[in-house]
Length: 165
Image (cartoon, rainbow, N blue to C red):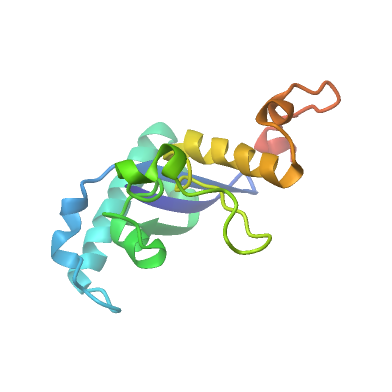
């Protein structure tokens, strides 16, 4: 996957966009053995990918290209380098049969007062990471998941348009 973060100023308001797209890990094979300093060819490849992503954004949000003030593209190699992922994936550790179900990473670590959550402990993806957060919160608070997920009429979520904030 490719991640690109854009800082955008539109109507004098600052916005952050996180744009994600899939890419085959093998597209980076010729660059994966580069060490600390990346080659000019890799840098140009990233620029080409970034331009494709921006052009796609522009199709859906005309004028956005001219309002981007900063951006940062992360490739599968970025994920390998900074978080030691398997083949640059973004959704946790590679799972093998011995790491799922009762053998999965636990929310409570061996280190006192250190708890874990995220896509590596229970299941991959946004849903896996979210569910692990509920599981870990339940352990810390001494509550069952049903108690944490129960609707509470005193709690309300209000969503504001960016222009109202």
